[in-house]
Length: 234
Image (cartoon, rainbow, N blue to C red; front, side, top):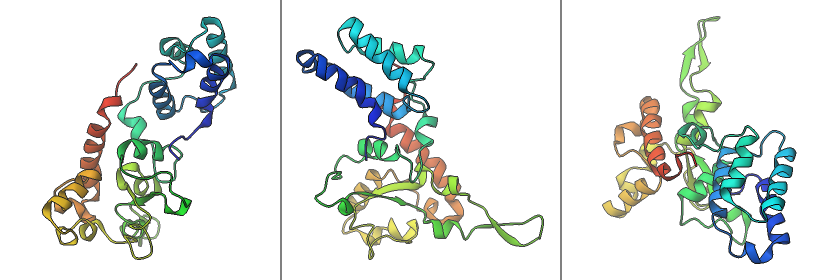
């Protein structure tokens, strides 16, 4: 789930097959994978790009990050990770688990049963957000959804839960004002740890439906800070 595209592995596999001794000493392949997967450089028509990367490996006989990144940039593809790149991911997107895998270090992404794996959940349940309606200018009725799918499903309204937490008797459609309430936790330290792990703004008023937009704004700041280590051009 954490690798949205296996295409990124092809140049590494090629290098490993033809240069096994050098592959064992390769430096920076984690940086390579992180940057190309986050920025999605293998989207669109990647065949020519992969061919160019393989030819570069053939010419230099090595897997040099600067050379590989140069090939990618020469192909007109960006490797710069910006906040917009992170916030473009959403519930159900192929890349959201990549960020959550980096975000949640203690979650088991390889359980014995797939159904026991971590699950992406809406902090503000969709059913709750759908209760907010606007007036339809054509009919004058209050029947237009205020929050569209892209607003409900954005990564800033998502968190990762264990299968048990998100099960039948788990969070379900519980609003954040209840799910994050201090009363649910055995101690103040446990409560604080939970909020910190999920990057939840501490102000309880932001957990109310009427402050959804403010909640998203504040949580985006926390997410940006969380991933500040990668928000730069290489």
